[in-house]
Image: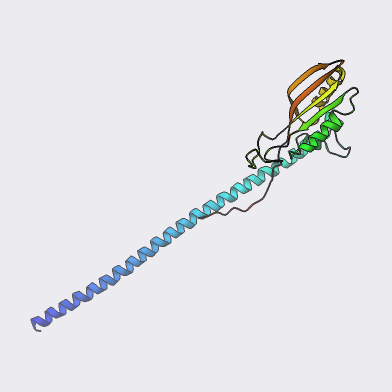
Length: 225
């Protein structure tokens, strides 16, 4: 065999071997890349599943805690029904005792209702007492807009009021006693008594309170990878 033929044959074998090596390396690289991508995907899937399980466990824990409190809450409500002080101030005989507590701290501002309560219940029927003036202020941000036109509640869930009454000492004392015994929480912030001939004029400034209702809602939470 001629030397040139031998050289050509060797070159052909080397070229073939290079092609084979290149193909093998390309296949191996593709396999490694695929394995790497698959590993990353599986890791992300595992982390996502762990996040989902964590949220599920939180939900289960909350539900179990709430369910465990049901019986004790029912017992406490039943105990309230035996409270004589609450029974005495029920608005209706058929009401449960807990309704008295709810009425004492209503969920709405409803300043007109407070005004009616002062006029019809707390200051009415007192012998020798005359109501000169009565004003209950609308709650800014709830029942009226603020001075700058914004709808933002102020005052910490308070309803302010003021009234002026005329009467003798016993009548004025009875009015203050009624305020103290009111089912609603009433805080007298300013009190002034002036003599007016044989009678006295009492001016009272105060505040009552309300607490907006809490909404309990079930919702779905989207867990993102």
